[in-house]
Length: 345
Ligand code: NCD
Ligand code: ZN
Image (cartoon, rainbow, N blue to C red):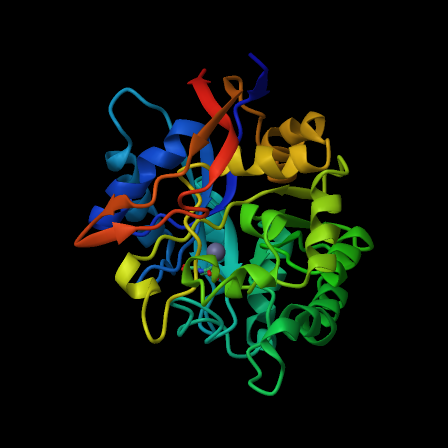
């Protein structure tokens, strides 16, 4: 049987939620990944180091017995974040980055930043202590077409921000466009995460035979030429591009609704989905560095010492998964994937 053994990977962009939802989804991540960058968009968000410490303890308490997992925490940036909080974050050792959500851009972003300029002192502090800034890179201007929001964010906000803080390391999260790929390639101290859905699907998937809420996430899926650009970037063996699932669980009833939530659930089968995407362009030999090397290198953390083996053995993605008071529909439910996780090492 064909097998692929990789250094154990990490997920550099993950939503775990809290409470019973956290306990439902965390085992899926732990089965594959040694570490993950944990998104802070809880309700209310994780704005302080003390809140990150408490959330980290709740995550560790939910790790299945006998398994190892290290949550890498982030703080949620607001108009009121203080430079002192940044220094405390850096001193904590467990806060690894700060997350920028434009106010109103996505799930639980109401308390996000209204104007980037309000955070100048915070960015100065982050630049000084070398704490990375993670960007949800979309404008929220209602006059901008929803499919253009990432591209316009680059021109309107990211280029000026980078000019003001050239030494601030940034991750352009879940990139979806050719323009984002080109910008990351041309800019120093700028990396990007890439999700499985943006590698595997284009925007036609949102409307295939009807409206498909489980393929809806933010930034929304784009045209095929954008998908090809990010697939090319992910599989090029360039350390600027690494794995971040953006697995974002929402219950079935909140997705299948008159106003459905944004987010795809991929934690169940993330590595299998990435393997499918890499194999589609004969680039399985580039998967290990994308999944296991470039992320820790960017975050100045050691690479993992364990391993993960995938075997070529078709299996069907389940239609539903258990989730508190409801169900969870995984990305690609009911479809057949060709790679399967064999043995966590
Ligand atoms: C995320 C969520 O649900 O928390 N949703 C999504 O579509 N990606 C928020 C986010 O990362 O935008
Ligand atoms: Zn996200």
